[in-house]
Image (cartoon, rainbow, N blue to C red):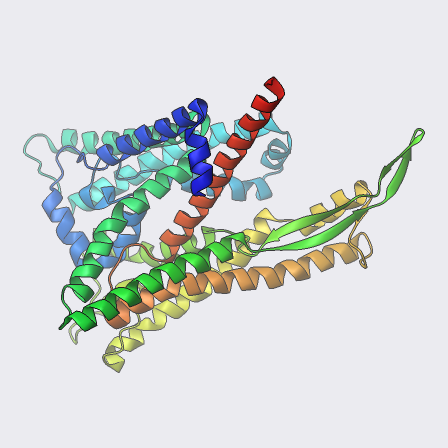
Amino acid sequence: MLTTIENALKTKEIRMKLLFVLVAMIIVRIGCNIPVPGVNTSVMQELFDSNQSLGFLDVMTGGSFSRMSIFALNITPYITASIILQLLTIAIPRLEEMQKDGEDGRRKINEYTRYLSIVLALIEGIALVIGFRNQNMFDETGSKYVTLTLAVVAMTAGAAFMMWLGEQITEKGVGNGISIVLLINIVARIPSDLSTLYTTFVAGAANITNAIVAATIIILIIVAMFVFIILLQDGERKIPVQYAKKIQGRKVAGGQSSHIPLKVNTAGVIPVIFASSMMTLPIVIASFAGVRPATGPNATIIQKLLTVCNQSDWCKFGSWGEFKYSLGLLIYILLVIFFAYFYTSVTFNPLEISNNMKKQGGFIPGVRPGKPTTEYLTNVLNSIIFIGAVGMVIACVLPIFFSGAFGADVSFGGTSLIIVVGVIIETVKQIESLVLVRHYRGFLGN
């Protein structure tokens, strides 16, 4: 990877692309620290300190949500809109036809995604402003309607700008712009989390020996997590495909061998995002209503149910009273596995692949074309999905376990690490392809 980056920096065109990405990163981080007009940031910080389950939203927005900055919504409306459009392509035949129309169809779907993103940003902005206003988080010194309207406009405009900036990174920079913005947000929180781990377990150790042991364990766990996620992201099952020979005119075509690459983590990070959102949504709604998770004898049923959804209360082994709320972890695991199967079934169609292979004269050795091929692909896919889902569960549960059992509170959990590793791998691959294309151009020019 270092060699690839070194070769990329030697090329002016690629250097300019990387410089553009760097400038975009700086703009994102500046915007994440500019508060929305009229918001009381100290009250916002108290809310997040008392309710750690909102940390998932804060990680995805690079801390801009807890600061209630103009980028508080960040690119979440665009991601949500993209997922909605992707799911609708299965339900609406017209969208499915657009998706198959090539570049023109994808351009129209991207346009619809932008429009839907603005609508979602406006709805989310209004909901957030109304909910936070009920918590007295706005300084309404003047007209309250002007203050609230400015806040909604600022957040909606911030989400629209982030969407535009992501597209500009894709067009003029390196990698997928939306993924790069998400990567910036997550990485921005890692230094403070590492500082927290150091303060808690290394600087706070009883003696130098314990400090060294604690530092070694932390480093090994982080490295092992990254290696595991890299293997999970790169792992794939290659299904061999043989194409029959055809006579076209006086020539014999076909006869070559190929394969269908099925990634182990077929659904990517989407199942984890869906599951985390489902567990966080009740807490967010309750926070707007002024209800907080609680476990004491005076806690209501709703507060205890919120504690089940509260990730910071999982894996605490002090007593049965604390451990029983880890039931939420089991629900979370089941949701990850369910969404892994659901999302893959929506985005991957074995019947369509089987039909395309049959039209092109392709077949899987030892498997008859048609229905047997569809059944074979479905069975292989189901086993791969389960392996990938278990891998995602391991990557997501380990940080939760260490947080609950040992108090290692960090914002970069399994979801964040999967996103970081995935984006870095894809970006490096694109840089490698740019370097390779540049090399061929120079060779042909000589």
